[in-house]
Image (tube, rainbow, N blue to C red; front, top):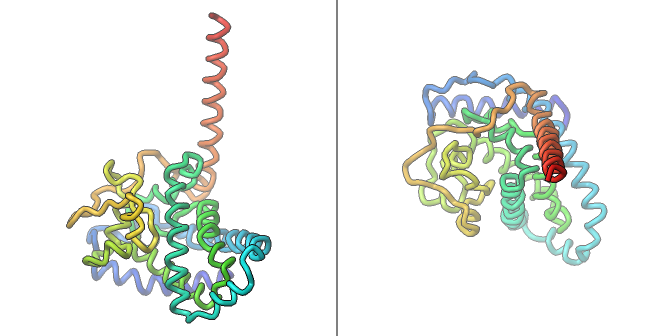
Length: 275
């Protein structure tokens, strides 16, 4: 994908979601050009290209080394299924993978440092969905899609999945009031994902699934209060508002943490010597 494809796709997204967020707004007073919009626009073009290139490279290398582990007869059988059956299987397989990788990015401290960039969003809309750290998304997308490629699913079915995943993700982050009714317990809805981004103690580390909210019910991480939406989004940590600042923020924290550990270790040694 080159820069021209990215521009074309983004213009189509704007033509869909800007009117939708005006017609069915969750927060009517939220401005289109809200705080941080120009920074998130950089993520649309710069981060997306890095993620696409990095994930493509990692997936290609993984498939080259791991595809032979799956018998050819099995791969041929997978690809011989109808495109829509393959799509449903990919949806389930990929979202299970996404669920556990996403959960790791919340619960493993060194991964959370990368994921804080995405959760620094304080006003959700379709544009904010693009605010991610490229390493975060390269790992997440690769871990999600490598099994799909290794098992031999048809590229057309994978393309259908990638298309629906992207547009569903934009909807989940958008500033829209669209309800899924009882289906919200099976498929991720805007309410479901807004609670994932909520700055509310009871909602922390909940709602990990990308598309199938039923996975959170199965694995015990669902939080979906009836008829209520979050009033605050974001995290307690202060994350830089600039693009470059967000790119280096996770690594500055690692450096800071190591320095703190070194100082603490030094103090401990001195204390032991004094004794």
